[in-house]
Image (tube, rainbow over all chains, first blue to last red):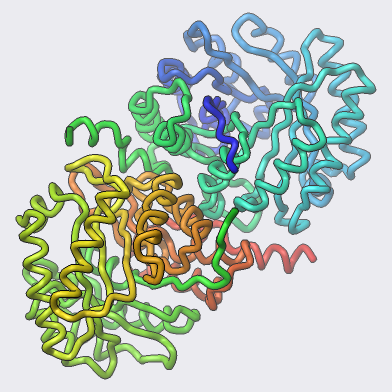
Length: 319
Length: 319
């Protein structure tokens, strides 16, 4: 009854998420060290920074220096995040080091969008039309639709599969209008409302409508269900996940100070490994990178695997 | 394809697990306070202490005072843990406050048994025959078989479903020999080796052989898969779980210092609530009890729900 993928891709967002939210300051050299360590783990996608306003996100004032500093490794796609034309321009400078692509990012919750961006549904769509056109004009493909708050919202409550389908349809309409070719859809559980049955329903509904699009789940572990939700995704055949080493990052939303952020890359990698699903990741190296991240930020990260370790070592000793 | 239970029972082991492993000392009055708080959450089973050698487990030197101190609530079964005749005698003093029953406890891993108890398989069986007979002679029913290391072992590696079935069969043979009526089997993932597929295989194999026995899963979150494993149990129709408020406890096994112990009661309660499975638990009250536990032991507990909160509050505000 299950449709497990044979191979899973984990898109590592630890550097970008972590260095954005930690109180810092964290030296550029330390950021570069973590990116280089992650590059040696077998990960194929690493999001290295945000090109955002340094007055709003001081942790990424050194985005340029960080991107210039790491040592690119063949076969690894290094990505970055930005939200507007100014960020796009900064990213374009590094077109030789970064894998540049744009996303049409829409929230399934209008209340979330209003609260965070001061835009209603139509306002979101209009803004995305403009930014998508700007990407295409700059020669940067826009291949992805990202759905924020895809399973529930602290301000709006539950989000149904139908609302998610409607949001993806909004994004597809924008893409068609400006001539973007969408190959990917990311469903984000921005505030930790997902459960395994909700993952099944929403993934099922989106896939039924767009069977050829590749799905990514971006899961937060706000309430401890993150890995159970990822497992539900695996059972549904979802083969791509965003995650952060050690569970770097956190939840910036009201009412949840200290709540965990993203699922930990090494917990998901361990689950896949133990289920016989290939990730290409050297789990021990990834755990070492997580410990390095802890050293850099000076606190314990939520990942249990950083404490418990992989099973392979125990297996080898026991044999 | 799933066989979700309509109601789940969570057996709370936080006081016993937590106060055993914390460096302490923790005042008896504080232990009593947590037990009384847990009694008001709707939990129906609370394990309140261990009757063990205070030289070996100084945290439970005040087991008697703790049991004498809490305020029993109608409808709640208060239980305790002990390992030998001396412990049984101490428990018997409180037969009016405690729900007394014995377990036949066997490790599916002989290496674990040898390492921890200095007994091989036959030695375990012999010891259990003796202790079971002692319980029956004292008028205490022995109704449960507990399988330690039921999914894997740091000293022996993977444990197959067949090894677990053989271990339960050993316990059933002891029970038959001494006249104990087994109604329950607990499968414990003592060292955090379980994965959802292993839960399915092992639960399936045990249930196929003993369809009328009630199964309990005792899951550790050593590698972050605890709630995913509980969800696999739910899908297999398992309706009873051991857990600890806040994730109290820890992993006392070599090579895993600081690793999480039991799954958090409130994470499991939230999963059940969101899936429409009844637990009888007031989740907000349980979260409050978890925060009280953090205050008592003076450190943050691993439960994400203590930070993220229940969804019901956000839902109510959003409505």
